[in-house]
Image (cartoon, rainbow, N blue to C red; front, top):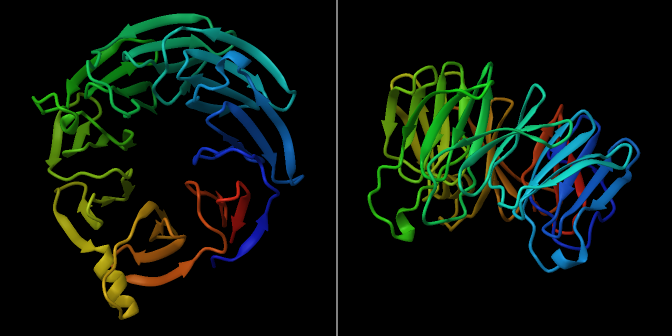
Length: 347
């Protein structure tokens, strides 16, 4: 319905990062100063706030990569630190300095924490004490950009996409099953640097949307099922046998996962103008999600465009507060941060 249910007090003075973690009861947010803030939705208050870093790092921007499991938050950062904190007990469990900036999301498999550094070296770390279990080297990118490499887990496999453009299938025990390179550019200027959205695992397929192509791979052997020349900075959505994505020039595209056939391609600006019976205007998209079999596109001006899965607009509404983070969806509610660092719950 898009109606406000709850708004918190201000969580932080400085700018919060735009990703929210949720453990079932608490929302966890971070900022670029290294603050970790845990807000209890039940008690409607901050129950934990902590900054790991000493004064000598005060002026350095921190990029925290976080994972939450069983009341413990694991953090890898761009300074090379890796640490874990029990935020319910308010206790640092362990902290290690690996001296090379980390540059991936984190995954946990059994008793191991898995992540990668900026040189595309994969770390298998004991989640109990932070000690190294194993390293797996992969290709290093000579030229750096802002792309963060990604891990995805599926059954007894880990899939890793590095900044060089290679994807690896690795067993949970750390053995490489196969790897292929998806970066088809031979140029080295900044415009041709490899970029990709995070890996999606869907049934027996891997879906990778890069800055040049959409790849559908067989996750068992890496063989290419489909390659479509299309790109986006937004993570695609998979539902049934359909992929939904939004291109760089704001086209909403629906593609059949099996055949690669484009079911429709709609200029979102024009669809909005036709629905409102106005002239087409520029729009800026924050993110999009599939909610109750509808594609909801969140604009940076806090309007939300509701498309049916078949590609026609059902409604356009405005959120009660300005959207300043990626929203998360819990049961029948949506949770996001507004521009005043307050948690907003909308139902």
